[in-house]
Length: 288
Image (cartoon, rainbow, N blue to C red; front, side, top):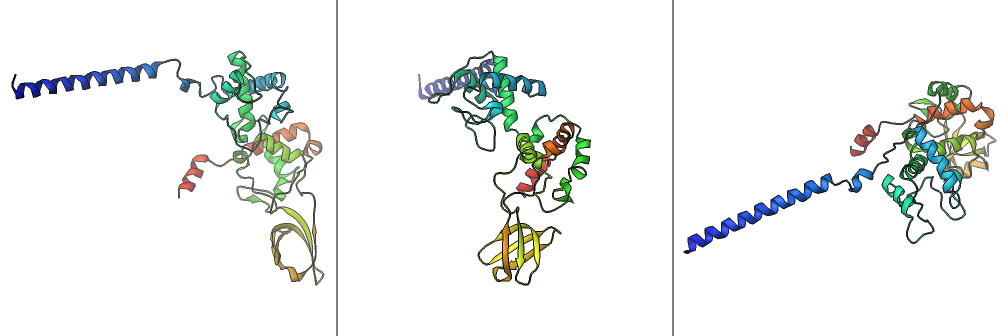
């Protein structure tokens, strides 16, 4: 066999090897794609997140998990809170499902090995505690809740939604997209432990005897900015002031569960939960 024949034989052999390898790769790829054991199929909860599934999950959680975790996802004696504004190691449906069924190595979290559907219901409930309000079903008449917001509850005297309302409180145009339902309910029914910066009420008396009430927006050793109750920004130097009285409690009412009928409070929650900006528009703004 001369050199030309040998080269042709080697070339054919290499081509055949490449074809065999390509065929084997394609076969493996197809087999993996069709494999029923792939975890991709379990990333999302197969039961969904309907109000019925979440309610069933809440009942199962409170019967099965409160030996360590607190009732309704709060902190317990041995387990952390599963709801709140913090980061989580187990975030996806599949991660939470695995933690429930298999436990978490190196921690006090034991395996439960519940029926799969029960575990998925608990997953739906835990995720509902962490989702922003716009992502969960909130029962109630939102249209009636809007009337309560502007009228009976007088929320609009301090808060603004889509350009309408007051300036003394935070803008609520994206409240449902930023806060959980739990946080919104707490803001309406539980006194604030800490007053957020920029919203601390105070009374100011100048050396000339003028009195101003409002929210302290900024202050340092030399100056103070106060948004008064007429929504006018007042600027003072410390030398101008005779007295500054800081208020210990927020101006935000925290007793709507007492001043509003339960049905009206639920309608107000339904309205507030739907206040959310379009996420695609926010992404476009962030790219600019």
